[in-house]
Amino acid sequence: MTSLELRLRESLSSERIEDISIEQLTQSVSQLIAQTYIMVGYQTYNERDIGILAAKLSSDLRESYAYLTFPEVSLCFELGAKGTFGDYTGVNLRTFSRWLKAYKTSDLRYHAVVERERDRRQNALPPVSEAYKEERELAFLRSNTRPVTRWNAFIPPVSTSPCKSGD
Image (cartoon, rainbow, N blue to C red; front, side, top):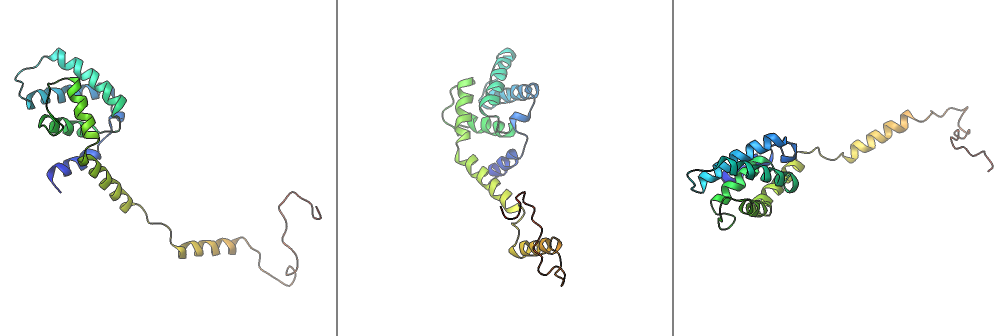
């Protein structure tokens, strides 16, 4: 397993975007955009532009990518800046949307999610065995039946149905 796959597995176990407050999400997105500016080679950036991009991107993340975790988004932007998700067309909403769409359907994420689900199934409790089922059924029957004596051997059990006998 590569270090990228390990980072993605860790990212998948983080808090989902839908569970992060919008204020915290916007602040984190703002920092992520500033880091992305640096990764793609811009020396300076405009705080106002980052604020506008962060607000819109946070809104888009909540609406369309709420199931992702923020570390996944961060990894997506890092891979996008490296050119993994196509040609870079500038630090803008269109580029970020393209990266997120490509990441969402990437083989890398698909395999990590499948592996996580497989691990969850393996760690789940095993199904109840047939021997245990039979043991519990016998215990139930023993506790809910009356012993046969010579006095009640031929007496039918009391009916709990609302119908009278003979109906």
